[in-house]
Amino acid sequence: MKYYEMERNTILEDDKIISGLNGTYVKDRELFFDQGKSGPDKFYDKDYEFDYLIPEAFGQGFGIDAEEPTLADLQPWWGTHVPIPESMSFPISKRFKECLSKFKLNSSKFYKARVLHEKVFHAYFVWQMLSTIYEEYIDFENTTFNNLDFDRIDTETPFEVRGFESLKALKEYKNKNWGYLWNYEKLVLKPSFREFDYHFIMLLNHVVSEPLKNEIEKQELTGIRFKELPIPLYFTDEL
Image (spheres, one colour):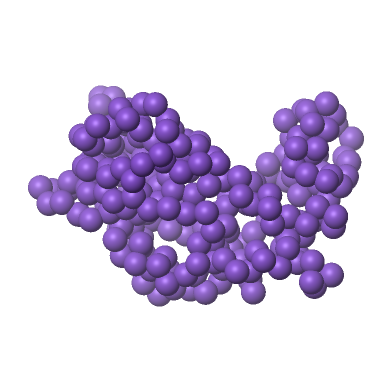
């Protein structure tokens, strides 16, 4: 099975910039936008409904000429009233949600939403992922780490490769010896990783299976693009 990194594409085919969604008009927005009732390791405390969101072109409100607001199947956030970044939440269209429903997603939850665009309400969802579950799938006995930066470029410190029994141990060591930098030298995953078509993995971000990538492309969903992973994924049962 091959895997890819899924990214948000900022431009539509007609070269229009995809707008961000603003939660200014969401009912009781202060309950979760302003108080941060979610995070990297927990879902929102209730099944909130994001009713309603508005697309806002980047530059609006800053005296900058901005394009007309546009919608896509995967939208960014924009404005004052949006979820905290740590919540790992993204607005997606109904058809993107239907596409995802055909696959098995790790640590994901969906919340109902509506988007008001050109005086019409569109059915959307807010897709939230947990960004800490991936550690459970790392085979630490066979995985090694290095002190390259996020772009896998050498730093001024001497290059080093080490193994660790957990991410906690890695972070404790790198804080003392590598500063804020760390990366994967060789990432080995447990076979159970293959049970899912979507994972979040730190530094590799949104990792999707080839079947999910193919279906997204077949459906011609907008606001999404793919690229090769910067490193290969290995599995314990293949070593």
